[in-house]
Length: 87
Image: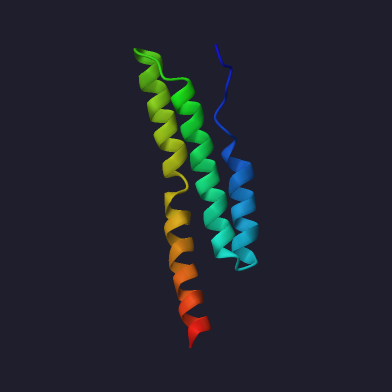
């Protein structure tokens, strides 16, 4: 059995904050997508039936949703930045 853990969100969030301060929205989006990919890999590797699976599904959803607002905002800022650079 594979012993995997969901990645710690605090490290990814800190990097995303730093990238936002640097106005590097594309990389901020990339970091969030990387975090989501890693969560998905762990979730898929640990899929099981029963109560454990339900708990893991809730944990997986919660971890991913924590970053959704930041992701949406970064996409808006990136579009705004690109539009400004084209004018």
